[in-house]
Length: 79
Image (cartoon, rainbow, N blue to C red):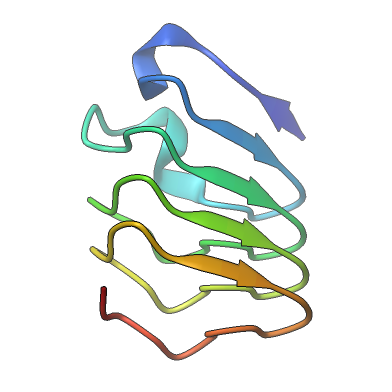
């Protein structure tokens, strides 16, 4: 899955189950998710970067987070 569209407000998503909300919400702003389940629970988070398997997987509304590596910040929902 490789997705980019103007409806996701300049976000880029690559990977199976990587931020499934990217194509369904206009609140997904300027996020980058690469990897299986990267930003997998994101709903309203903005300006996040998640690279790696399950990076920032549990984050639903965090902003300005950077997670690099397998399961990096997996259970974080903070800012």
